[in-house]
Image 1: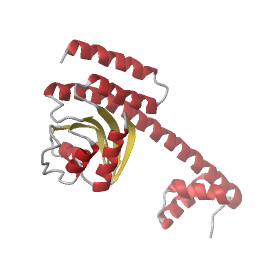
Image 2: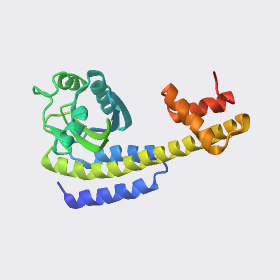
Image 3: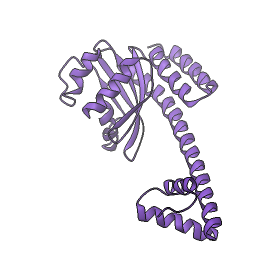
Image 4: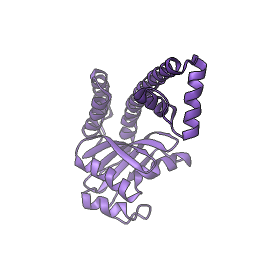
Length: 232
């Protein structure tokens, strides 16, 4: 591994990421750079898992996306176990040297991955909270493609992906929070005008309905906005 060349490539990627105009483009740039920078890598993808659901955020080709869907359908695979490994104090990476050999940990995923054309792979944990987590996956078509140097360079690159993904999640959460605040404020205004309530009482009505119906406060507020009042 030429680490000087690697450093130059990472610096170039970092500059490119700053120029990207969207988080989606940033994540796509990361997976493209993964194939260019990490030795042995033929395909790469970034996924998030929420419970049993898996979503591919970016991928270089269909191989990564198909592997994501495969793990979701089977309910097993490196991406499902990487968060558990973190909780157990293990490394934040799985390196599977040869998927053509028996893999007792993933008895259904491994042979199916071989059918997709995967010979070896690496999975890096990007973040984990509650039931949701994200991972950067690297695939090679031949067994034994990834070395210790590949793992080291992948770990550095994964740290950039983690920062980008964190930014995307933060921006999404902020937008959602602002939208929720606007909807609740609009619903309170409707209740205050229609039922002659003060601000505190209008919010209390929304809160009580949310608890009574066991639905989110934002949903109740949206219903009030759409109906112009309280139904039933």
